[in-house]
Image 1 (tube, one colour):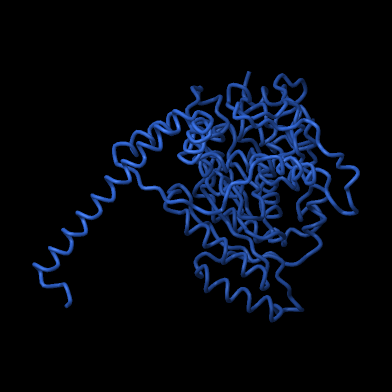
Image 2 (image 1 turned 180 degrees about the horizontal axis):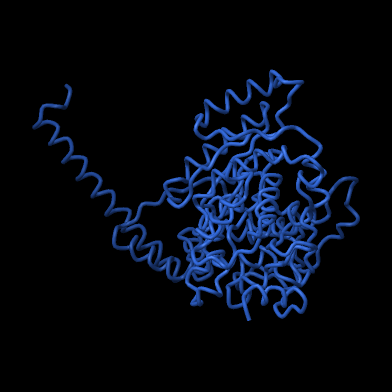
Length: 158
Length: 293
């Protein structure tokens, strides 16, 4: 059978059929329950009756999304720049990459996990304090070295 | 007049324009009908979710039959290319891969693909499919004509990428000049990625004449277009005429309505593109008086 005959036959008696198409602009129904991993935060299934707050011209779908969003914790807009020791940075980046998480959420999770455990928290803070002392000492040494170089090269203004 | 299946691949002709109403569908549709009138088999591809070409050809795709959406988004094993091709009613030389408004979904699919520019071409030319030459779509048609949407979208880009022969119809007014500028910029941006594509020409559309003279707007617009595109790329203009609309609506050619002279710009376009056609088609066209004159 020639290709043209095949095309005509398919037109008369289709053998290849496609499923109903989803309109990209029509929102899909949310059938599954929405819950977060066990961090103590679970979305409440009972949502406010949006019918009661629908005003003229307001989209109920938008309102229900806004109500749902309000249940999530707010992420601060303030950015905290963190500088880490190089080998630790590499390990954390690898951990985040392989676990599909971010450094921010890892830090939040470390804190959240430790804060209920006093002994662990004290251990973490003790280690952090010694790290601060090491960084301060290293910073002082870098400062002395920079000033010495400047004096030797005559760039330091008197 | 009959033609055998060509042994080389059919070229793809794409009328381009980044604004609506510039004549893309008119040029593509009438070119296809004209070639079909000489016995040349033509495959139309409607790449516009507005689906004007599909409507003008009198094709109503059933909801469960593949359209261009499935050609783009489904693998050939699920939706073989031939299954999306529908014969055009009342014309045994015209065929169509139709569109409907769900074709809009293809934009989202293409946006997520690194291959959007070449996607349509790969599908039309069945790249990677293990087929006998006589079973390939591109060897069973003499020309493929794609009707792209009138906006800078992924469907427009993939239509551009599919083309061997690009033409830019543009209204002979300010809007048309702007559309031409933007479309030429689009071609310039992507030309290096599309070595198989070439600009066949610019066709001023809806040119207005009063008596024996073009209106000032028409004259000035065509002058600017000539500066933008180069005189060598300018093709004869299509007049503002109800005959073209009637021909399209009635699924005819201007000659069928008693106006063969209005086909002149289309014949000029056929002459311009015929070197890209298969030898057997060239032979047919050599025998057509109004083309070979």
